[in-house]
Length: 395
Image (tube, rainbow, N blue to C red):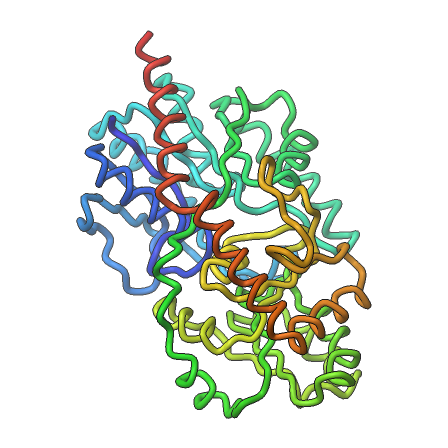
């Protein structure tokens, strides 16, 4: 097959969808398929790059200003008069059998949707982020954008949509009903091996942690993952474990958690490491006693990678977060209801004060990832769907 992979986010830009789209693209190429990646320019990355069996074309882009409406995120857009012609020319030369889009609200997704409609190319769309914001006024704006911008382009290409968890399925069915051709339940995939073997002492020395128990929180800090609940749980945690530290590993785009920490008098226990290179994540996981972060509601790549490293995870999430995969509180994860601050604090304390329980939860979580979320398993499920779509086009 000739597979065009489309994502405004692609390495060297960090992020869950960026790394997943690269891993899948490399997997497609390793399986013998031709792969063209279309993405947005980012920093000093080359405009055209060929590596790992991929041809990567980075289109000129501008950075959307970081505002709360933009989820305080550095989003690159390629919109300019020439982009339609450039993308059409690139895809016509490549002649894709199928297009795999990542992210429903990017302009490259919209442009390739128009192309797919005109050329009759089937589209698989992975929705990585719910277009939501906890502030009511922004939530209304996002609903409007979903209805007036995202859904009309989806209606044109009628993609099959990858469903990564039950909350994403509910979101897709609510916001985009009638604009897609079907759902493909495939969870996020992670490499269970790359997170192993980190040097935790390196991180403890860097942040002067000593022997303190560490609550690691991995991922960019944005309104949907603002870390406020973790900070609000800290007074109860510190009452039981006075030397505990909350180590936030990720770019801070939204600093309300820091303001809340100062108001609660727990800022001494909060360390923001800032943006961390992917190669250093195993070191941070090796230094962690427990990992926890808000994923809005639900679990994402960072949680799965922490579990793959054998780190016990405390998660405000539903037990049925992944269809067909059983999350059991106290067995393979420590779960609390979303919004339950006392429950979050209680489970953090359990993980910090009961080493035997923490170790067993870590071991069981690691086994769960290898059984259901390994990148190889997820890659094969994507390829099965793409092959079916390409074959249907030929018929």
